Length: 111
Length: 113
Image (cartoon, rainbow over all chains, first blue to last red; front, side, top):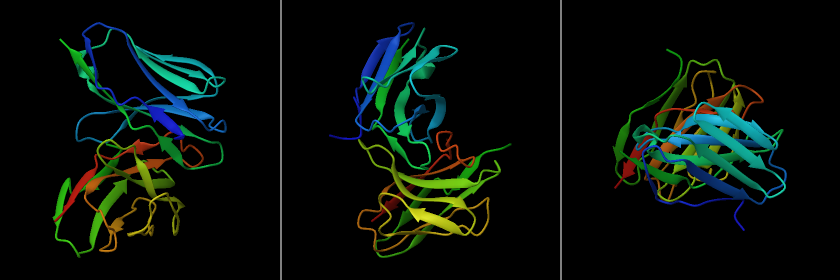
C-alpha cells in the first residue's frame, strides 16, 4: 500500500461548483497535512496546512483532516476558472524534514 | 521581492555530461530541498539541507550531488551516473522545524538527449 494515495483525475467542473479533492494515507504517524496548487509548468504553491484532525478555512478553501479514517480533503467553494490547476496533497511527521506527496489531481473549472 | 529563484527555466544537455541547477532564496530560511517531478508521479525528494555545510540524502539521491556553502544557495548537480535525468526539478525552502511550510521555486526543466 502506498503511503499517500490521490486520485489523479482529471476532474472537470462548471464554474461556481463546489470541488472536493481527497487523499488517503497509511502512515498513522503523519501529523501535518498540506495542500499545494500547481499551475502548468510552474512550481507548487502552498495553499493550506493543518495540524492534526479538524477543519481549517481560508476564503473559498476548506481543508479537512480525519485521522481516524486516514483521510484528508480540500473543498473549493464557488470554483473559478483560475482554480484550474493540479492540486497536490502532502504529509509529514513531527521531527522529520521529509514530506510525502500525493501524485496530484488535475482540476479544470469550465466557464 | 522575497522568494526562491531557479535558473535556467529550461536546460538541454547531451548524455554523459554533468549539469548544475541553480537555486537561490532570500527568505532567510535555514532548510532547503531538491525534488524531482515526473509525469504521473508525486514529488520525490533528492537531497535536503537543514543548515549550511550539511545535507542529507533523500529518497532518490543516486546520481545527484549537492553543496550548501551559503545559506541562500543550494545547487544541485545531475551527474552522468543518473540513469534517467530528464525531469522537472524543483527547489524549496522552509524555516527550521517547519518542513510543513515549504515554499517552492519555479522549477527547471532538464532534458538530456
